[in-house]
Image (tube, rainbow, N blue to C red; front, side):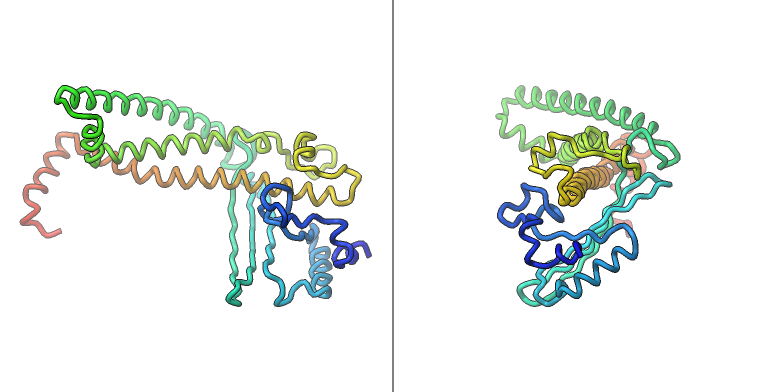
Length: 293
């Protein structure tokens, strides 16, 4: 009966906050865009009961502008979480847009069951990457300083120096690669230093599961624990945190993948400096007009 009362429009306004008046700032369903959220439970029977009740109450009609099903799954063998999103949006043109997304990300850095306990090795490799990145930054600064001194001896202005320096393809490629490397380093640090990621404890035990900190409760104006709506806002808070962690981790992976392209280009430059390789490339270059590629 309480479930039916929740769905009835007469009881919704007193129980739920739609969040349309100030979307993106308060807790709410699906990226805090505003709307009404219903829990489908944790069992097949609870899900079927809720879907049937929503259908009987005519929530699934042509008047529904947007509908999103989002849930989180956990793979204990790999120690990975997956954010699943299935969305239906009715556009003004009458076209129904459908989308489905599944994004997997880890929550543990140096513990857990994934990757055959190679998390410590990941941290060691990240330390080596950080040291090499620091060396590369110093090397780039030294190279820019040497080019600048040479341009000053030739009495060139700073504008002409920048134009000449950036006109060299290898210099531009190295600057872009260095910027992406720094962005990759920062995004990984943001993921590692995330407070929720470090403190979250996935457990079915009532006494061991993660509890929303009091400062976060005050920040979002969440009701007291005894309020029946609190469990729903707890879920909203968890989804918001998981969405942020997933976005940071996805940005890290995308930047790392993009940086691999520029690293490959830099590898070509380094390999070309070897004597035997430079002779081969010069031979091909001298005979390119007579060769068929």
